[in-house]
Length: 337
Image (tube, rainbow, N blue to C red; front, side):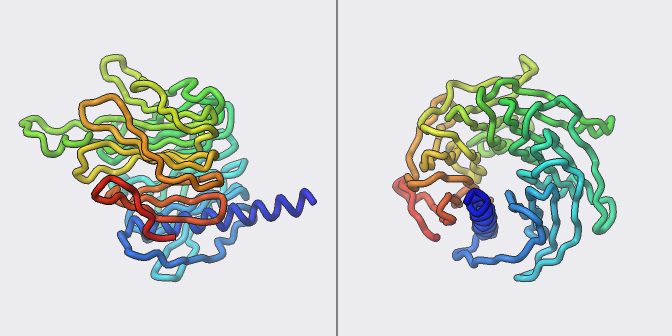
């Protein structure tokens, strides 16, 4: 019956997200093996996202029950420390700011809003900022903080096809908004920031201080992936090159890899067509080269890189999460499932 199918789908999606998040945490901690950990988060509906903070000591969950929960994690023990209510629709995703900005957490929802939460005292969280009405006219599907070198900046992807950039001005205490209109004509599903410094920038001889750059990658229901950069000359965000084409169905997720001395930029993409692609770009070039990681034979929901960018976690519709590593010869090998 339809109701039974819906309940099974909700449970499947809940298990999927938990497995994916655990794998990503293991990757970030550079653990050789992934030990499964599960617990009842106490949500009344599907859990869509799970994110650890910078230190891996706090865990935030987002759910269709319109709430965000924050847990303290010590070993295998979890303690609920905050239950954030304020959204008027399912909460799709959460993102932690770098700790240099304090304890800040962003959330996005079907209610067309991004909310930034701040811990003003231990266990006491308040809304620091929420996007103004009309900024987006449909569900906001993804939200992510920029690298800390760029400042306190957020990017959000919406089903209305646009991407918004939210920037905090420390001098005035106000937030400003920019939009990349019509980024994906059928809806934008995910967005990811590039590292603040381009490949090779840290080792190039220069007497001038390094200046962080602003690059984004996005994907959507138009089966495409797009790279964006902020142009100081034009004072706006502009697409870099042509669309990255290769997927034949909705591209559910993109993730720009951290760059720890690698001589190239790397992006991973996951799609409803069951494929995960690895896109790479050499320094001082505009072309992106694609390599098929694997055809999983089912929709792939999420991809996530380790802190060093050496490992990739993938979660798919078969309730499976796998870890991948690039070999010396450039091929990708599965190291865990």
